[in-house]
Figure (cartoon, chains in turn green, blue):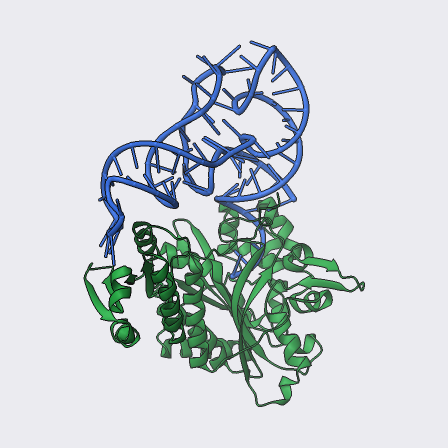
Length: 420
RNA sequence: GUGGGUAUAGUUCAGCUGGUUAGAGCGCCAGAUUGUGGCUCUGGAGGUCGUGGGUUCAAGUCCCACUACCCACCCCA
């Protein structure tokens, strides 16, 4: 199967790439509005970076990484998320010695060896942002607001923002102990899945769909009750900022992110349809990560947003995706002389910045019109014996069918005035 | 990683209990209209029936394996 894309990968074909441009254009505008600059880091990194940064115990590291040895014997991994590379670049590039905070965004492919299904691929693309060097809750609020602003710009309504705080190294261990004590007392009533979760990730049990587990989770201790004063205050401030910005949210103590590096704020932005929910954007604060990766003790916060999922939501919500990549003008010709002249005029249009094309298959005029129609050009320039004779071009408005003749010299100024 | 479903033209699908040259809609190309698109009509091109093996006089159809896709779970964007 040589003409088959590898499992879990997808082409973006020419007729659909405008959707990506639309999303990416909006992302670049918004990040500029908020003062973020682009960072581009390698597609692959040393495996240790992810093991350390993402966390040895996470599913991502334990079973989902595309890891291989290169020809020099180094262990290399295709990036399974965007933050670790940004952190590495922040340290390596000495960004900590520049004016803080550093605010950056990225658009990048990410790779995870998973079983593909709806909204899940082995290679997908993420838009992400990271802020380094600022511990204030206003930063947590800002990144959430940036994401929500993007959604509203794209005309996506009805997404749900859920926030939580999972504490810091000072208060989380205490909660962990309390939760495990509680769950231990109910372990025999819980589903087999949750029994396994108990050691690895007891927080996950709070989120189980089994009736018994749900009931048990209902009375479980809530992490928000165990936060230290600093974390509590941080979470309160975040909520005040969100209210100030008029961003609706729900506090959801069940949110536990899959990556080890989070501290304090975690959040998810969720698309739901029927029974199923899909996280479109997830992120939070990671105050210990830079230090963990060998840099100075630096706070950070950020999120990742799945672009395939975003476009999927866009389509399911039937939000309009304007097509801006289209041609403006198509030449239609009759005879060799006209064809050569059209080629020349076509070239001059393009030099003037007017997107234009002509027939390249030497077809009948009828076929050329059909082709023009299918491409959706708003305007067609017709060149035949008569027009060559009179040094004119006949212009047809494809929507109305109205035609007018115009001299060749005046063609470009005319088009510039009449094409939007 | 666990469980279920599906695999026939570019695409969406039909093909009854195995039985001659495998069909349709849409799309593509051409003509009706030799200088005019969208609507209509006519014609045409396009298929190793996912791959490999088996049962049978005979397999798109039945059996097995593999692969891929879809769906759910785990987990995640």
